[in-house]
Amino acid sequence: MNSGDTAWVLVCAALVMLMTPGLALFYGGMVRARGVLNMLMMSLASLGLVGVLWVLYGYSTAFGTDVGGVGLLGSPTEFFGMSRLVGADALSDTIPTFAFAAFQAMFAILTVALISGAVADRARFGPWVLFAGLWATLVYFPVAHWVFAFDETNAAGEVTAVGGWIANRVAAIDFAGGTAVHINAGAAALALVLVLGPRTGWPRETGKPHNLPLVVLGAGLLWFGWFGFNAGSALSAGDTAAVVFLNTLVGASAAMLAWLLVERLRHGRPTTLGAASGIVAGLVAITPACSAVTPLGAVAIGLVAGACCALAVELKYRLRYDDSLDVVGVHLVGGLVGTLLVGFFASESAPEGVAGLFYGGGVDQLWRQTVGAVAVLAYSLVLSWFLAWVLQRTIGFRIDSRGEHAGIDETEHAETGYHFADVGSTLRRPATEERGSTDALEGSFR
Amino acid sequence: MKLLTAVVQQSRVEEVRAALVSLGVRGMTIAEVRGCGRQQGHTEIYRGAEYTVDVVDKTRIDVLVDDAEIDEVVRAVVSAARSGNVGDGKVWVTPVDSVVRVRTGETDERAV
Image 1 (cartoon, rainbow over the protein chains, first blue to last red):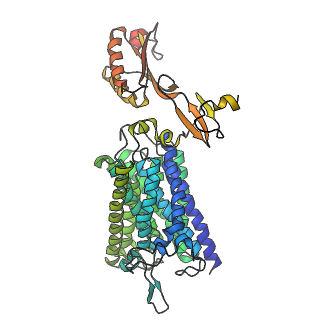
Image 2: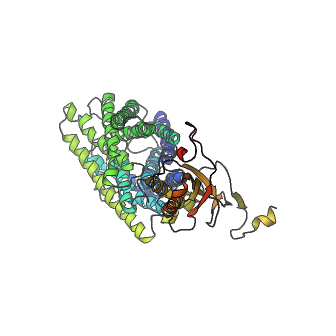
Image 3: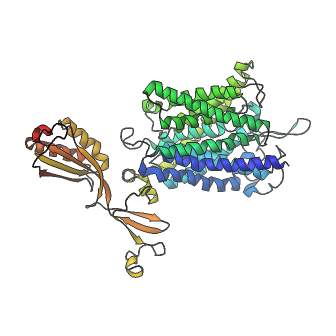
């Protein structure tokens, strides 16, 4: 084991953890004021539930011994409860398995939280939590196995333990989760939107972003945490991590510029929301590519992603689906752009050492990228649609129109995000009193 | 000259505004207000402490209207504001003694 590598991965795990509260603020600022708390809560719920599921069987499903040796699923019971994990990680050998498991836990949590932006103001909280757990179990954990579980080999190069089919048989390059995280979450978001339908009054009366400074704060936290997400995926503190770190910076920088330029040309003004969205679009696109391209390649991918996503977020008005905070337009489209562009911009001088179409490598890597992207997209879209449809038909996923009218914060959480003047609000019952004792204050407090 | 005041559901403001514009009303004042009527308030809970919030968010629209047109405008506002639920609000009309347009000094009908 190597203490430098271990320290780096543990710090990166903490950085990635911060992305989920960052995402909550990024999303929270974009909804109307009376839905901000529910938007925060959908992300927080993922930190709670998916964190626990990861320890129970999530890690094992993603990184346990492959069931049947076909690369579809790890054994959910092998490391149930994270037993038998003490010791060095079998693949990297320089970090503890627990450091790797903690780092990957944050990925699972964030991916589930990403989906929530699509269903602003209309998903009941209980069914959302149930969906989050089912989706993590049936979609994220297996797909993480496909993409992130590499074959273990012995000194002679023979495979001693089979990993996921996309990572090994297809050999698609997805360094930190363009397919497993972003295409996966983006496709799930699309499925949820199709099942739940648009917000009442969309798009005319569903409101503007209520707090853009909050959105920028969230985007900043995401960018900060993303250095852990990408550079931490090197699983060692060395050359690869350093290149990836720089590519993560510059991919986002270029994408922000491109998004602002598109806005300037199409709508006349560069906007704050556009800058924040461009940053995230660039980070999404560079995620799969950050180990496979040079810094100039990262700039190119950022520019393409920023421009594509800026155009893609307008599609929902033409195609009439209420992807409220553009999870499809930013994460699905950005994930596809980054994953496919690896096939063009991959350079042999980058750590991955693979040449793409523009660097004399032909179309070999491009088709591998395409297979990986399409497989994850299709699987996530179908499974997510089915899960959401079953929840809607059985327990009801969408809040009723009265609740939507009053605002989801009041309906689902009995709180409001902002109190500027406490007119007409009185404490009826302190926390110590039983529910139902309507005159509690009469006796104990007056 | 009359002052029409409408306190309506927030979600009906766009309809009311559109109805006024279609009758040729060009100016109005719109404010976010809170108040109480027959509609129930709601409960909020913070670390188990339960608060009753007895006032609800509404929107208040004030508009100056000629005497000859006031009945038609009231009818239009009421029908645009109606959702059929408790809490649809009130519309009332008060007489106005005089109106001055600040920029020109024009008065009464010419100032509206």
